[in-house]
Length: 612
Image (cartoon, rainbow, N blue to C red; front, side, top):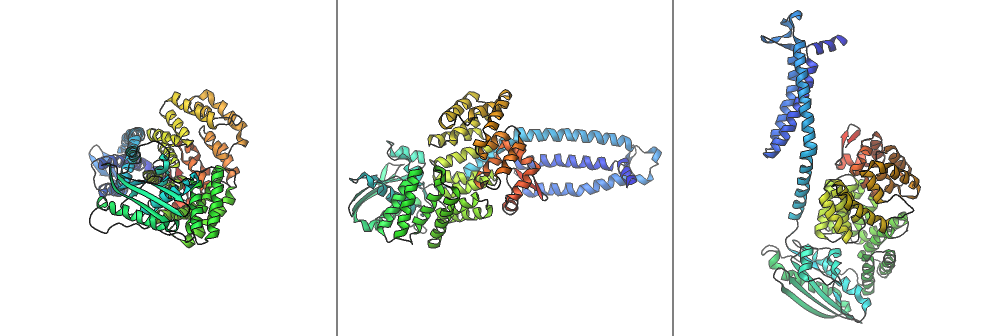
């Protein structure tokens, strides 16, 4: 074997193999760029690859059987060993290999630091534009109806009627309906209809009022074409309270007729009908009250909503939407209180499953089950529930947002961007949607968009908006602005006793002298902080052993909802560590990726994986 290897080297077979591999790689990279720019068919690149693969054994055989001499190519067996010049040819091949490697390294550097960022920006822009192009031009916002009752406590009823109408219009094919959060964001504000329409990017606005007195109710509504500032339709309805579902049906029907021309002449006429979710009017009022308080968030409001939803389900155990809303209230309570996650999620699953037994088309219930499954690291089950939610209600912004968060947790960052952009188009003033977009753009190193959506998230009250702005400004070199934002965050949300704050973290990233101070403060307060808050701090400064130490301490209780932190740039060294493959295998992600697609930062390598 030693003699054979020596002969391979003497005949320059090894050098030819190395030279061929390096030159082939370089040619493929150039072909990929050139062919992409001239929009050549895919088969051209595939044919180039095939020819290079076929050529490799041919080159090896020629290197073994022939020798290049001053008189040309001759069979190796016909050449006297004393006259062989393979050593001269070998030096020439060495020079060729070195030159090719220099060119390859130069191309790799150029592609990563020059073409790469530009290509990523173009991809993000293309993704944004493609999602916008899929949103129908015909769009409407249902504003909160004004409570004209003598009792201010009837506010829940006027809000509920508007929300019910919004839910009916969502089912009209070809019509984009802005979600509740964005439509209701202007409630009580002195903002003109044209400005609201421009902010929400809609062509039509539905507004109205509700007067409720005893068993009597008056509902007025008007549909406005913002582009022409004209009223397409208006109506007033005086009914008994028992007829409230009939009123909703009449209003939605009139709206669809008024929009018929705008939605496109010919073909099947779009229809919309209000459903009668319960025969029990008292249960329906409790449900509307519950939605009113749940939408306002906060511990007291959510607990009150849970109580109201429970009363509604007791009055009518077949009231599917009350069960679904109860599930949503349970799953959100831990975010706003010290309620135990395990207990609330168990109650949420029970209520969601009950809702789906009664009505298997409720996107909200599927979304709840999906989020619980993600928390429990049941990745495939989470994806299935989220997709069912989207299929059930394609215009449900929450369904798209929560699926986007799931995709972010499993490392599919670009796919997460696509789903979250859909949610944004449906609900542009939702705080959480803007915050997730800011986070995704940070992960994609698109700092301008991270700042844009970070500003929007903060304006809407989401604290991550400040963090995203500070991080993005630091990446862009706007040090002073980054520190101003970090100071603002620490002042409003930091705990002086739980140092270090965001400002010290950012200072440590920009100033090596502050690094030891930050890491010392982090170590001193580690036990009082959540592992999810400590991990990025250690990872940012390559303290990988400390990161894995914390992961091992929390791995049994590590929520799938927190897995998004592992895909940020600062944790590249964490992902490249051999222990990462063991961790994701244990967490069930390797099996999930094999079936559902690999994350942006990792690719399979046999039974393991390679990450960047």
